[in-house]
Amino acid sequence: MHYRQRCRHTARQIAYTGVFVILLASPYQAAGQGADAVRMIVPDGEAQDYWPRWRGPSGQGLVEGTGYPDTWSDTENVIWRVEVPGEGASSPIIWADQIFLTTADDHVGTVSVVSFRRSDGERLWQTDVPDATGEFISEHIHQKNTHASATVTTDGNLVYASFGSKGLVAMDFDGRLVWHRSFGTISNYHGTAGSPLLYKNTIILYQDHSGGSQGGAFVAAFDKQSGEPVWRTSRRASVGWGSPIAIHTGERDELIVSSQRRVQAYNPNTGLELWNCGGNLFEVIPTPVVGHGMVFCSSGRAGPTLAILPGGSGDVTATHVVWKSPKGSPFVPSPLLSGNRLYLVNDMASIVTCFDARRGEVLWQGRLGRATREGFSASPVAVDGKVFITNDLGETFVIRDASEFEILHVNELHAKTLASPALVDGRWYFRTNRELLSIGN
Image (tube, rainbow, N blue to C red; front, side, top):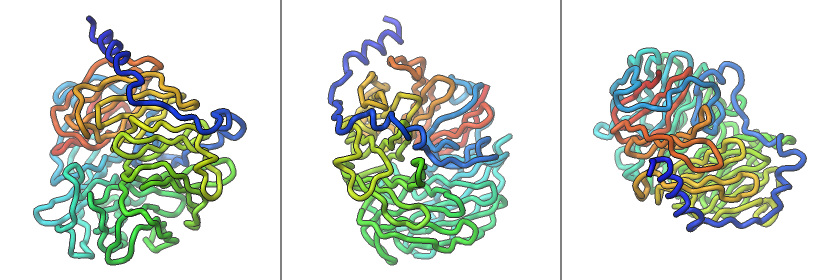
């Protein structure tokens, strides 16, 4: 049997096993008036030419343009490869001819921001972050986490990086530390991971934890030029590793935080809570995606995905959930919304599920290699009519972005890969456990 035929056969065998959808509101609410107005707030101008933040300029892993190769290996189509010092699971970001990422050296207890030249991979600088707590070495992390897991972001002037107990920093493009904001000890039993978000003139992040030297969980905004606090709102969640997003509903901007037990929306200018929605499980990592008038939030170890109408007030659990899929969702990778199709990677069983995002109907399911518990960390990307899903072994499954399951081929880097790729000007940039690679035709 041909490989593609076998993939379709496997998809039919496992389709709809363990996944069912509960419709809790009319999907036409999301498809009606105002649905197109609900959108991710994205950086404009020159930022659209690069990969300036977690999940790229779209904030959702969607890539414009063509010319990106869909086949590679650790030797095929490799333009250059360089060693990355230390360890880290943060993804690379790109602005002009510079690549920025974070790294940690647990032997000496340092964390750093590193810059590479995009054209040839030469390391330009590496700047260590001061330790304001003195407790970095004893900070516990999960075996798949690192002390450098949050992806940095940039506005083209400064680079902003979050390091949990080491705090939030801003550096210029020459590696000089501009400001440093300490939060004291962050007590999260798997360590920290959430990436900061640029919104207008502020940098926003949340740290859900059980209490440290400067208080418990919070979401906060800081002036991006000075690091001075703009607002700070306390939270009740004790764990969480996700990243916030900012959306526009047509009437107002909302800051969305999907974390322990609940999804919450805040006014990004003041920190005032706007609405909250129950349904998440205890542990939440994936970053939400936005489309068709809804925000899609996944949580737990193959737990639920919620399709929520934003714009509400107070507790909207009973009124604003359009559909809910209680099983098969990602634990670590974020969802991918491409057109009408919502892709979820069940990294507890190596299964990808494709939903009709508007109605919550399962279009198909497919197996991604051998079933492995917690075998995927990188978030998927969509480019040129294909979806690319990379597992922790460095295998990238190239799937046709369509309403039927079809694996086109599998690319292998033969290296542990936890970070999501960055894509600019026809080239892929992958960070493995030891290297940074540029891949192109």
